[in-house]
Length: 138
Image (tube, rainbow, N blue to C red; front, side, top):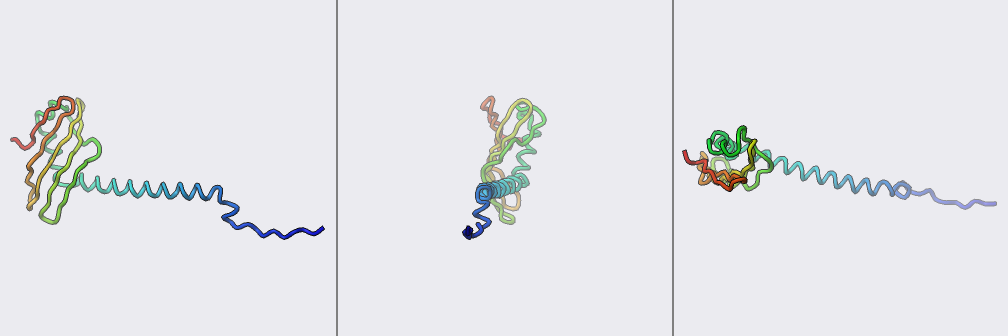
């Protein structure tokens, strides 16, 4: 009896059942990490901006905001909008979610920069009561 010669299967032919799903899953994980990294980087840059820091600082010392939201007041989630700064000039239009022990709100900030920031709007919207508190009034 003579045995027939059968060529040896390639590595991919032998292992495709686990390699293809693992490869696809790896691509999806890498894409998610890339997108998450971009999101984290942009959010971090926005939180480091003077506009963000100024708005949070003003909200933390405003008596009306403290009365409505309680103390301490802190950022609460994802900042939205845009900030464009080019050396000594720029502009911003951002929304900063904030929270305190008594509730939540959003700071709306609009401004331009010519060496220093000049804000045309810095208002806290209190979600529970629909009140708006102007942080630019002294």
